Image (tube, rainbow, N blue to C red; front, side, top):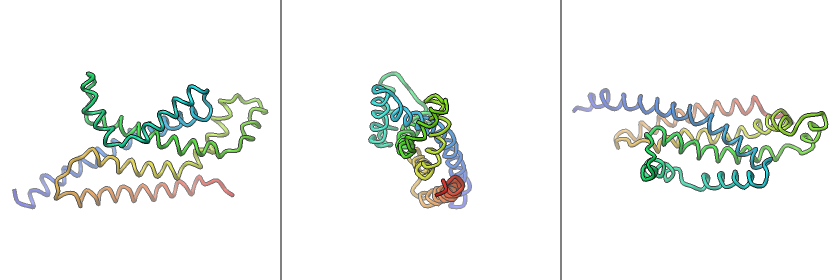
Length: 200
């Protein structure tokens, strides 16, 4: 196979498939990872003793477990227990577990940065604790956690490279594709951060 045929018949279709797979992984993983991260953060801050301990264990374990090892366990380890996952499902599950644990830390820190008096004032106005958290605390906490969540979103794009095995000749071109994705995301995240920055 000559070089031109290799580029048009192998490399370009492979890049297209890889780009679509990356976008699909991020599109599925990012929102679920964020929602679980919010739940874990709220559980750690406002849950009872048992729930707080459980959520803390979740965050510590999946933050501490290397992502590549987690993917190996999900794809190669689970079949020993009769659970067989496709490569896509194993990747999505691994990315969600990792992404949500990091997001929970960013959001938990932001929740704790909201003054306790606001929660007390909301209760004084007749809100329940859940209503106060949902309507008063979380909107502020999520705005404050945008830089951390954006950073994790960029990491998520780069995590997806763990799913692929590329030809040596294509490493440089693959790196350029990832660089383009990360650069676009960084500009978008900066714009989002400026738009929702809390004045003062």
